[in-house]
Image 1 (cartoon, rainbow, N blue to C red):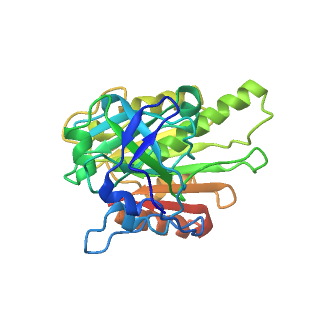
Image 2 (image 1 turned 90 degrees about the vertical axis):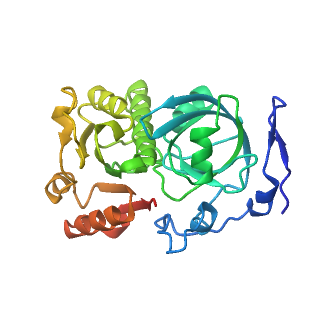
Length: 310
């Protein structure tokens, strides 16, 4: 099926679509819900190849960058105004088409579906690499830049009102925090809905975040994560891990910092084989090690959902 080179929003703004990518834009294949993004082979595959087996929406949506934030020395967060029909589930990613850039990017949303409903925007946090889409974000993208996006991914948290309560264990490595932060924000939004309705809506359990990065500067969204834990102290908790910290840790972060990797002891504290649902996102070796530890602790494979980044 052909894809138009120019897409128009309801407001009439035009968004150019790279012609060299037009033939790749409608691939969609069903997979089981537990399958996630796979490790690349020795030959570096691009995003569309890696995710060919993942579910995707059929529609492409024009979008415009409306804000850029320096999240860290290596990460830029884009605030993107999207088409009114755009929708996603917490934890999913987008195919990211950039006019004039042949390669297609793949970036997880780091915002909640609630922000999209309230403000009509999504957010993407992109780490600097020489891969053309990420390089464009850091060197050429400006407020007003136009792109085209399509939602995909089988890694998401989207409970219905009738679902039984689960306790979330979120384990992130590096920029693998992006989809897990989206899930955490979505859970907070559901808790707000529950409070507004007197607890008649969603059955929300607890959520614990284990987040590992090289140093505290690379712990993205840390202030917002701590704020969520303070707002819902009976529901949310977090522990930050830094593996290459070379400076003193800020005093306000010290109670939450471990200068080591995530351990079996910490995981055991937050694993209940009957209630825990674990989402993992990070480098493949970390995912494989944590998954094995969780299964050794009695968590069944169908309660471990993971997404590997490269």
